[in-house]
Image 1 (spheres, rainbow, N blue to C red):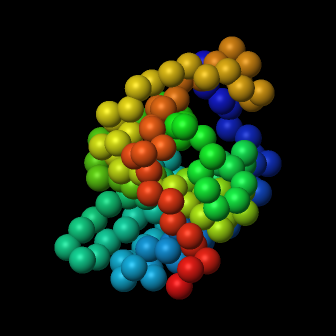
Image 2: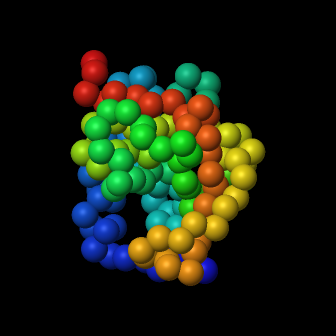
Image 3: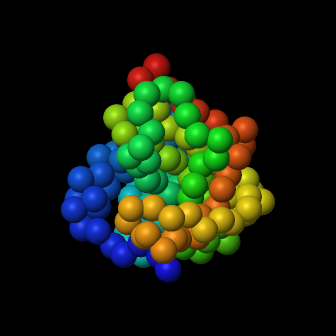
Length: 141
């Protein structure tokens, strides 16, 4: 079982989250555009001899600057994005900090079924250990 598309959450977070991620990559000297393929990875990043995708999401239960959980849950349905170079960019609720995870860390993580209020019977998630993520302060210059 997996979560169904929720247009209200999409509308609330998608554009803002992608804008924050694009700004981050551009500050690092990369070219970053929104993927024209709406079913593909969110952003296409290029520069410094590299090309990769960036999948962006907001973890609504993460508040503040420290990542407070022992694992970062990434939906298993995003497995399709691990077949090519991809960074996973997970923002906190205020979009002031991001957890960046490589696809290698994602694919090496165990997959667990997690019950939650959106999918009470449980959905499969990669359980990436917090030690495998890099937390970035997006407010720092």
